[in-house]
Each structure stands twice: as structure tokens, then as C-alpha cells.
Figure 1 (cartoon, one colour):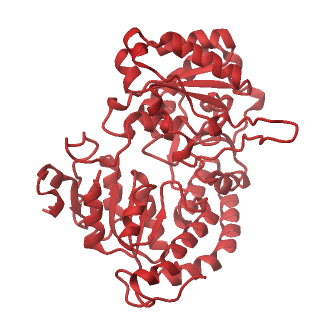
Figure 2 (figure 1 turned 90 degrees about the vertical axis):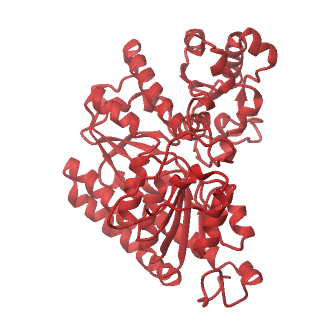
Figure 3 (figure 1 turned 60 degrees about the horizontal axis):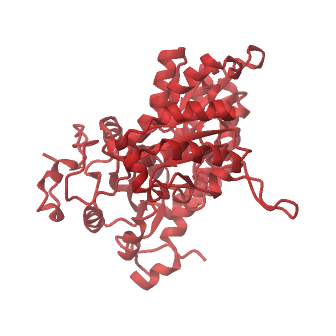
Length: 486
């Protein structure tokens, strides 16, 4: 069996079934998407974090009301750089700004007496106060957490009341942190509940539908893109140059009125297939809207995404023209980085799909992936990882910190692509890191994004600071260096 028994797991043998080496001849699926073993210090986020931090938070013009004790409100824009252009900064004539979904965190601050007697009145009062404070907001989403989910506050009744009193669009996202094994449950919850509420909204307020006169034969929706560090600035023009119109993005930098029009498009283009394919599946069943799965990371995968999208509309020639133009822009830069990064070893630790998205990118940069770890991947994610992985690559499902440390020690990567908190572990071990959660200096999607990604990897590996750790002529796992960036 290719399963791995890590030394750090001697006291929790249940972890053995989560770790394996890839084999070319068979696809090994580890235990995954199951509850964390008690005593195992998981790196996972909760279901609420998935709903609030990943899916609902990036919507640009709505208030995110967290119905919870104030501690749960920590998951705000500061933990994930899903940027928005809906900002009017303070000016000499304007003392405040309207970046309410980025500059502020709104919470009902539940206290013990609210838990005992119920928090309905406090929630409604908080929603009305928030809309009064931020009149620019087009709507409001109420998020529940463990506390308010357990006491059973009827947040849907509050939503209906607030919508009736203010005329704003009010949605609910009931995904208490304790309701699932990881943040992946929150992704699923938000998709299902938002779809059902939009469907209901369109029935009772048909004026929100896209008028027939505004529809075009080339309307699409980009699903599962959260505008990390301006990713949409890199990929939206690619589709528009082909003659397509992106009616809505679910949910990066998007306006709520556009999201209500999602059922009016001709095709859904799904990028993150773990956090958002659920809503594409429901729109296919409910509105007969087809969808295609794409990756917008890397040159090869972006080209494939554009070609497959264009083929649906018969725009193949335009796609080839866009690809040729973009390749001419980036090829020289990529050739430089490819030469500098050739043969370097990489370990990747992300939530789920980016592992299999990024194995291809590393190959394009002539790098070797030696280890990967996923926080909330499902069986189909591991099938895709296995299909793309080299023989003998170490794979860890839902790792704890000790397993990450042992993974890095045993595989000796030259670079660790990791998140906000685990990067310090890598750096203390003398291993360069790049923030693969919300990027170093993005965007990373599309053609120009690939150059940014390669640049950040290059600067991470060749940063002069490592000479103090490994000497001028060596880094971990690499005896010779090509030079130092200035």
C-alpha cells in the first residue's frame, strides 16, 4: 500500500489513512472530507468561514452582518484579499468612505442574555442600524455562526422584516461553524441557500430579471472567482476580447443586482470547482443553463479555458487571436523565469483545487512538485491530483502542523507554496515561501498573472536573505545557485 505512516502520528494512527504517495498505475483516494480526529490540531477553517470568508464576503455592495459573539467576526476582509473597486475614499469634502464591506466588520455582538432569551430583536435592530449607517449598501446578508445556529434564531423572519422595512435585498446564509467538517461545508451551504433565495426573489420581484432587450447571445457568468489581488483585472478582458459579456461573477467584486441576473446567461464558466460548482449544477437543473469547468491558472490551462468557452459560442478564431496576442506579451518573461526555476522542487499546501490547478503551472515553469497537502479536498479533487501528479509525490489530507513540518523535512523542497499562517513554519525551517492563499503581489490568473506568479516564486527562492541560512552557494535541496535577485 502507498499509505504513509509519519513519525509524528504514532499517537494518532487514524491519520495514516490520510497520507499517501502517488502511483501512476492506480489512483489512491485517502480518507478525506471527514471530521477531524479529536486531539488532532487541525489547520482547517469552519463552515461559517467558508460561507462568510470565501463566498459571501467578496460581494461588493452588500453589508455582511455576522449574527454572533464578536469573536466570530474575526473572519473579515483582513484574512483574505478579495478586492473590490467599490471604494470612494475620503476626500477633503467627504470625511467618510463607503467601503463598508472592506473597511468595517458588522456583528450583532451576542451576549449571554441574548443566548438565553434569543437574539432576534438584537439582530433586526443591528440590521436596521447598519443600513442607516451605510445607505449606499444595496443589500444585506445575515450570517449565522455556532452560537446563533444552536439557539435557533429565526433569521429568515428577520430578513423578511428588514427587507419589508427598508426595501433592500436581504439574504441569509445559515452555516454555523459546527455544521460541517471544514469550510467546504460553508461553500456548499452558501451556494444552495443563495440559489434558492434568488429564485424566490425573482418570482416575487420579476422587475429584477434581466429584460429581454438587454440580453445578448454571448452572456456568460464566471463562477468561483473571488478577485484575489485583482485576478479579475487579468482574466475579464480575455473573455471580453473574444466578444463575450460577463453578466456576473460569483462572487468576486460583484454587485448584488448582477448576481440576481445569473439565471439569465447562456453559459456558466466554473473556475473553482470545489467552492462554487454547486450553484452551476443547480442552475443547470433549474434553468437549463449549461456549464463548463475551466482553470484560469497558467498558460496552458488558460488557453484551454478560452478555447472551450469560445467553442460553445462559435468564436474559435477570436480565441486564437486573443491567445496569440497574450502569448507574444508574456513568452519572453516566462522564458527567463523558466530557466531560473528549472529543476527546483516545490511543496504545495492550499485548501483544495489549487493543488491540481497548480501542478500544471509548476510543470510549465520546469519545476518538480514533490509534496502537496489539502485542507478540505474531496474525493474528486484527489482523483484530479492523482491524474496530474508525478510518481512518488507525497500527498497529505487535512494536515496538522507536525505533519507539515515532517513533510517539509522529508521531501526537502526549494519552495513552499502555502497560506498566511503556515508560511512562518516554512521560513523558520529555512525554506522560501510564497503566499498561495491570497498571493504576494498578484494577480496570478491568466497570462499576465502567470508572469506575476513566476516572478514571486523567483524572488522567493533567490531572495538574498537565504544566504544567511544556507550560504551563498546553496539552498535546501539545491547545491548550486544561479545567482541572487537584487
